[in-house]
Image (cartoon, rainbow, N blue to C red; front, top):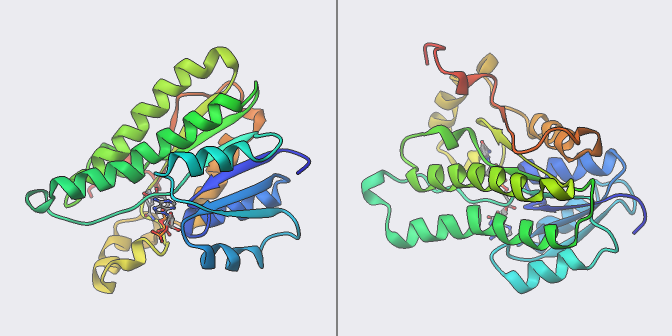
Length: 240
Ligand code: NAP
């Protein structure tokens, strides 16, 4: 691969997919990693010719992630999008539920970021995807905890990687129209949309735009930040 290279986990669906297409359009050569090869194959048809490669892996599988991240001759940006969501009342969350959530949403980010940071050079960027849920939410306490963990991890990595001029930031999406949120029953989805800016969920491309900004080398003075892309809902005081 020639030119800047970006590695995107969760690249086959929703926000990750939009990010892959956006970064490819911005001139990155993009490696889209996900656990479903068929979804990745479908993505290739929509990407600029030769702009996207795919890689089937599970972000919890350290050897697979290490090999995939070591493969390209350079690595300019890592974007950690892969995540799972499981609505469940606090009282009904099992230890296994909680551990599975942390495995993918937090330890999966840690593994990819650590492998990437080991080979990145000055000017490279790491962008994590947390969530507005990092500030709280009901009926998914394990998801909230995992995303608050991503915000903390992002800040800690930013501090340690700062001397090497590798910036680490997070994008915290609000309610976004993706296959993940479309698993909600339609009436619940409609009610959730009503609370959003303009009465609509964000488009994955809205989130990808913020990710692309933070993945760009131009943002070298921004690090350790979490950019909420949620129509202002995280501000509170909106009568919601
Ligand atoms: P999505 O459409 O389900 O996309 C997530 C992708 O990550 C899927 O292709 C999924 O594969 C993949 N993935 C899950 N676990 C993986 C693993 N262990 N290894 C590799 N890939 C894995 O969801 P999305 O809405 O775009 O969400 C993307 C990210 O944004 C997530 O971190 C999510 O928490 C965050 N987020 C989303 C929203 C929202 O409203 N949509 C809001 C805030 C934050 P499978 O389909 O096989 O699971």
